[in-house]
Length: 371
Ligand code: SF4
Ligand code: SF4
Image (cartoon, rainbow, N blue to C red; front, side):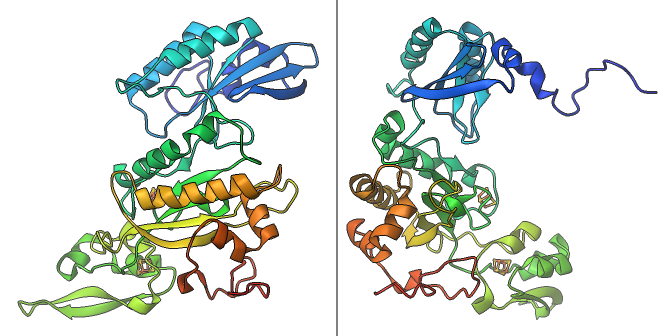
């Protein structure tokens, strides 16, 4: 028997129950918006109503203490409302201009013990906004690098560009800790990608006890795995698998299916940097990112080689691009040979791929590339 008005914990409640009054009232009737200063926006409705937004950096992984503090700020200034952007920024919204300064001052006053901002204001317009990233060593099983650590090190390097809007256009940075890329790094201005360089190690003794062999075989996108009979050191014959190493692209899909095929490796694992992608179709078509640094080692806890390469790219882009030009558009205009030169990055043979697929524009397909 259907029960009316039942409150359960199955699924979220309908989103429009949570609208601030001014948004409920003016839904679908907004006239325009503008960025008043970095991190502060105003949206104006046809009725003349306004809503002011203060955007602050958020984190993908938050403690309950931190979430409680976010809620406390929303209760104090915004009638309990807040929203998260797709890039995990937190937006506090107020319905009149005189509420903006007290909100900003409160946010600025909240600091960690070391003095850094808990709620840095920024992330709008022609600058860097929060990094979309994956989970890394915190909880996933196939990462080749850490997500939170690399993101923190990168955002510390780019913090001035989060607070300011000095860049020619938006600069979207993403991070995925393995090439399954659940962080969508394939279309970012700058992308950090964790990369394994060795095929899985096979634990023959336990493989047949831990997983279904057909599942492990079918998990491999390159058909590198086949069933095999293996004789253990004590002479026992067991069912296991064989991996054709030259077909392996180190994706870790097999490990997702079978815990007896781990591929984490201290020396083999590290970071690839990609650049020039974007999702937007403004001015030019969307683009995939291209690999620009084939490998950097995992240098915990601050990844200095990675942040140095990113810093050089951002500086060269900032100095060389025209207004509104995204990083990939700038590189296309000056030529990718020049991009490597001005970013002080080495062009190596690792950057030449042999994909024939038209969707993936590679260096080899370009008749213009003159290295
Ligand atoms: Fe896991 Fe890969 Fe996603 Fe990282 S990118 S969280 S390793 S699936
Ligand atoms: Fe296949 Fe990926 Fe496993 Fe290599 S790591 S064997 S490509 S599933």
